[in-house]
Image (cartoon, rainbow, N blue to C red; front, top):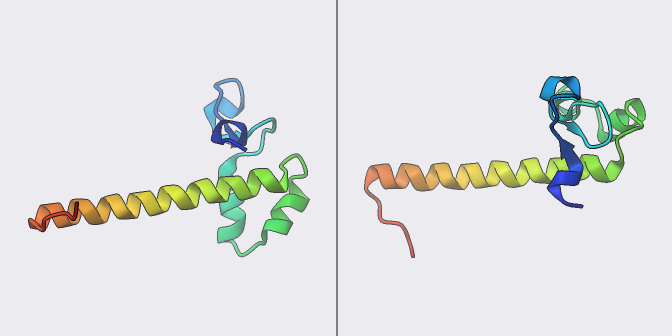
Length: 87
């Protein structure tokens, strides 16, 4: 599944809030559930219009973005310290 089919942003759906494609369920709701101690199964039970595949793909995308941001931040910090980057 590609990113476009996981998350949808449209001004006509919840004023442009990122939602799971084909639903009106904000992606942030999944993270709020997990942050609150609920399980993925709890979220899926409460929001049956979101497929397990959509939720897992959203978590994977978020994880990849988090790792990319951490690496970019580490590289920027090293550059700011004058540490040469490995080629």
